[in-house]
Image 1 (cartoon, protein in one colour):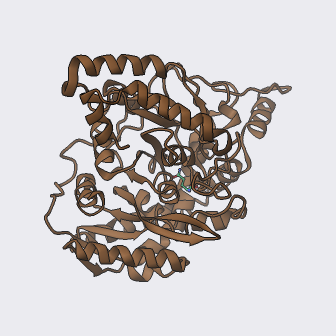
Image 2 (cartoon, protein in one colour):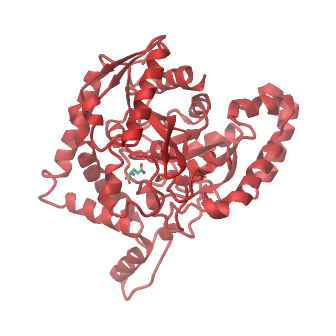
Image 3 (spheres, rainbow, N blue to C red):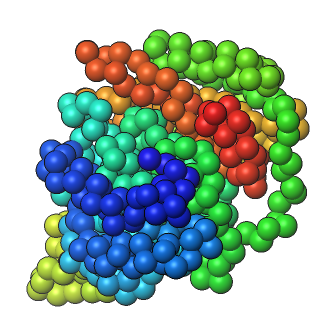
Length: 468
Ligand code: GLN
């Protein structure tokens, strides 16, 4: 059920938060020992559900918007008093001392936290295979990955083990798993949602993102978690960007040239069918050209590791989590970091340290930032003529576990999602159809991109064309 449907029933009293939590727990008991969407579940959810049920009896439709809704939370978002591992051995025994701002706001709106979901280590990956605690499987075909890095949240929602979920998106980690698992995944405008209490990966790219069954549910959650926050100076004021109006008829741009590269034929067919559907719904679809988009991956895999190497310097064996004793302080660092981090994390710290080395700044990081600015300018130009941009979310449907063991082939799968984070604009992945693979029916997502602060435009278009 969607949040909208559940809320109606909760208000009427025909179904209660206690029932919803029971149902979610049943699914977890039945399926999650195999799927492994959750790293842990929380017993205090039960008391919350009882309390929420009583509040609906007393308050009815005046109850807060997410009261009694069972949420799954990616394990890099802090909940006070609960562990937050970011999928790493480094933080295996770390317990959060405060609530992330998004958690505080969800709590005020009455949400219930079912548990913490599995993820690629420190959100680095596109498959959830780099988790230190073992991979998550795709609930629609357990030989395949759920996508990543927020694969646990996407899988939990797709199998009915929550009603909505939070993830984080640095280069596609909400949109791509949403595409692989057949749910809606949304990355807000950079700065629309506070990053306070999110375990940082690439600070200029990271945003908390939302998983839900419908675009309307996504909007409900966004309206709860968004907004300026004194604890995150990068959150934007309502009037930071020019207003992006809603429209009756939207003009959608498709960057045809960019789409040819590496796109699976069946994904292509699903994409074309969606263009037809959009035209049939009365909107206009036009070709656009985005030559800088192709540079996105190259720029991302310089900017992101640079920020990763800096952000992860704090895991020194002294201040947080794991500590391994050496003969002296330097050996403490070396042993702790060698033991605590996995291969993908180490690869990115090495890359980032290299591109930031004295003498290389101009050749790598400086250049990547220039490319980034050019991508922003190019997008701003295109948005003079179109309201939204449409691409597939991923060039391929869910791949099999172990299939992309070569890191470069994994990075290539991010081609359509990373430009969005580099530019800081909002984007949503909506289920657009399915493809058949080796006897399995796999979902395929379509991505819509809006200009800065165009989050509401994505919801407006999405509810009109896809929720109906
Ligand atoms: N798959 C991308 C990466 O590995 C994006 C990750 C993310 O968005 N956290 O960096």
